Image (cartoon, rainbow, N blue to C red; front, side):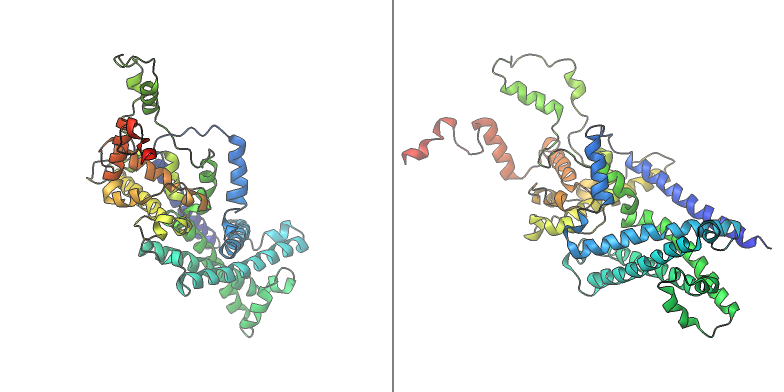
Length: 437
């Protein structure tokens, strides 16, 4: 019985980490459903982006209030979780505050004191976040694309953080030996008086309860991430690394189409010449994308990384002028469809069976796609280098090249370019007639 708590702790730890690892494996499998992307170029620039954007939060602070609060929560959450290492060692070996037997008391006190200050700052920041989201109701948090589960998810994670921070402070406040040390109890010393008058046994019970709930809460939080938009805590780093490093206005051209256009524009080319033998190999099996399997692995990684913060939508000129398009919804729809495909594969022993659905039409409409102005405002606004525009363009490419389903105005323009060398419906010989009027 002496080792029963250690055994229970080990079971919780193994189960929590094991389930998380299982979901990470599923996540990687789903991302690999996309096309491979060669990201071997611009290595130094990619790492620089990781340091500045993912680690340094440089794009977050472009909106100072939310950016500053997010930096506090981010730094606080990462640093405070160093304490988890001590909790795990204590839990496995049955020790109590193993850090005190390794570090000098002053160093240990400094560390725990720093954690307590950060916990208080995180607590305050999270409360402000909750007020902004639920009381002030900032526009990007009440959009039509953020109802139901996505809205609840944002609040659930805030409640999680509040509970974890309170448990951490209560755990320290009711630890009699830690309070008597009078080092590191920067915040908890003001909470400790709330428990005055309780017996030593009751204080011990409260401290142990807070300790257990804290570590179980962290394991639950870890596994909740897979089902939440907060996967960005883990995925922001690889997503930024694989993010776009070429100029934002540069689109990827299809080699087969580029070669055909060059051939058409070459005055010396033989219009009756047979295509080169290798040309057929360069033609993709499908132009553009109609489902998640047609997208690239980076685009699917983008979908899982989306923080649903809505900065992209709040900057989108189409959305601001009342159009149906929301770049955030594009990313959420892509992730939802990818999850649906993943569950289909799980249910069919590792093989995807046609479910009669696809991303285009069942999730994202033509109206949304054609509302995009391709201005890149959404890409510029994203704090973790997500590129909704690339998905929109690939789906537009599918509509135009596979279904000839472009809007009538666009079809007319392209026909004019083909016939007249200009977007206007005039013969090339008549293009300067306006000067005679």
